Length: 319
Image (cartoon, rainbow, N blue to C red; front, side, top):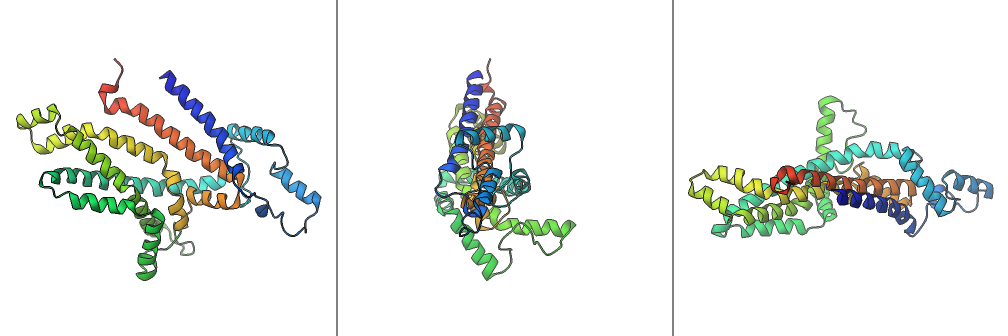
């Protein structure tokens, strides 16, 4: 346990350091978004004041120390491009990303696991090939392409679902009307995200179930005449759930980064859209703290997975 803790601490330190360096290694700079390339209309004194306000006049080591101080104090500074506190921007975007990502993950987990289980039941009659090919085909499509097709079909051609955003800004919905409006705006991005991860849960659940079918305890249960449904849920799934749980935790760790493209396509006001805009604007504060949020989420998901493994599989508990 001590080695794992030390490993996670080392990983966290590495993430903090690289998270500061990577945005500054990108080509371009935030100068355009600070209004400093406007043809020379600003005086040198005005330029220096703006640079000083955002600590851009300091050497990199001093900027790094300010960055570390902001992490421990919680004062993340202001965004170059949005002219607002980073904590306020991420705080407003975070609930939308959590809502979108959790719904899509649960949908792909349930649907993928059910299809994987159904595929295992069809394997003896060799009728699972079309199902495997169909799920594999869906998983091969790029997420942004699927999103664009959905927008063109359901938003433009049929006009039955919203094209962008998380809610109708000028509709003035409240109560149940607001809830239904949010749900309607979620359908296309949630389905798009779910299609992208469906094959992952399908193949993992199918492989996990196939790996335990010929185990001795399964055969013994069949010989004893235990009902098939009980064998399937109490014997097969109980032992096949560990790889599915592993994939689930890894997937939950990347929920923010995985939604970047989809949120950009649907203009969904989540962390992914904030990151996308920050990269385009070379907005260092917004970029580095968005990236840090994703990295810490991945680390937290791995820690939770390590703690849950002994609960799911008693064989992993220390004697």
